[in-house]
Image 1 (tube, helix red, strand yellow):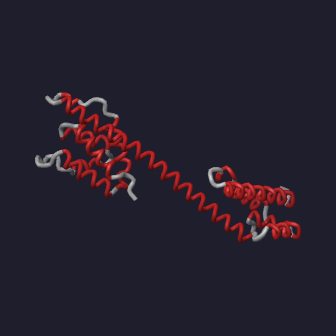
Image 2 (cartoon, helix red, strand yellow; image 1 turned 180 degrees about the vertical axis):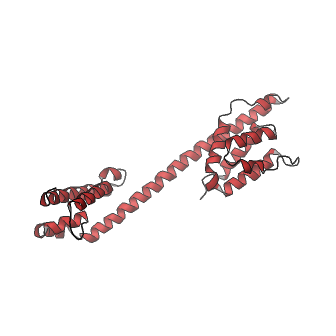
Image 3 (tube, helix red, strand yellow; image 1 turned 90 degrees about the horizontal axis):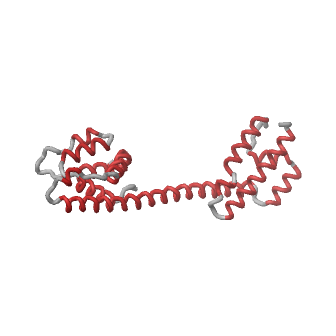
Length: 228
């Protein structure tokens, strides 16, 4: 899925076209803004039949098709256009007022597209992070349910075989050592700490609190048992 919409790219093209009157001026701006100078040089600058808009059409189409390699360049070009405060070549034209207004209007359209893009991108990023965390926690919840089907069984095992029970809570297998107890405790606390899930549903927070309480209880028991 592409990051930059067709509307965004069109706004960037219009702003670039309106901001620079001469091809050479546009060319120098592109070379100063983009990492891929060879790409800029390969464009048909000397072709009299190619207008600025035609050249930008080819350039931006290529960049969008290869977006993963040109995300930074597109962002830098956008910021560069938005930071232009003086249009020296436009100010020398006979119809300077019209051209300046055109350039400023195009810049404002681009600014709105950029702000909307930034807002949507941040929203998508947070949504992806949320879905990942929620999915991970649901997976861990299912593992807990499979491991301890009922609380009664947990209580019974804790009373009957506390070492086995607390070792299971910490995920200890084979020979139990002091180093392994500490290692597993720190891993689980980082994994299940309630603060990581405070933005999720209450049921997940409650499960995180319960899981953390049980981990601390298990560590305290095993620490005393093994004289940590």
